[in-house]
Image (cartoon, rainbow, N blue to C red; front, side, top):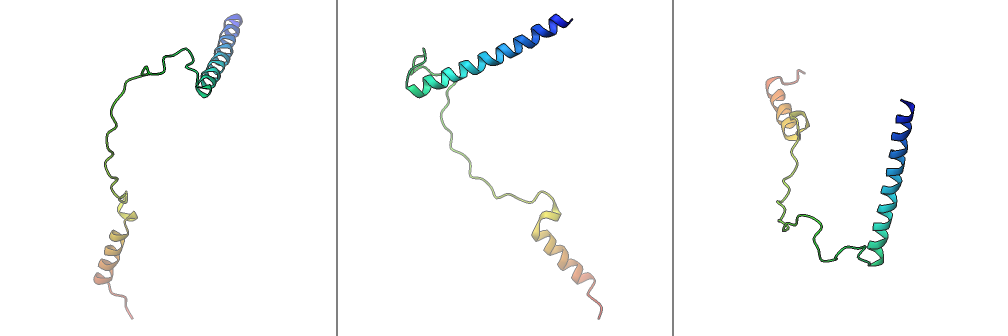
Length: 86
């Protein structure tokens, strides 16, 4: 059981180190202007045309107690129903 755990641990560490080395090499190739073994004009994945974004609607309160208009109307209703006694 112990040799299996050691082997898994070694594979994880080696895989992580290889990943970091390959990522650093790819980043360096991109900064140097080199193609890094790739054709520069080749697409790297699915392409799509840019779609115009819809205008953002103003954010509405999530709950009634967050809505200032609702709270104002509620306060006015309470004042109408139960005027303060003097």
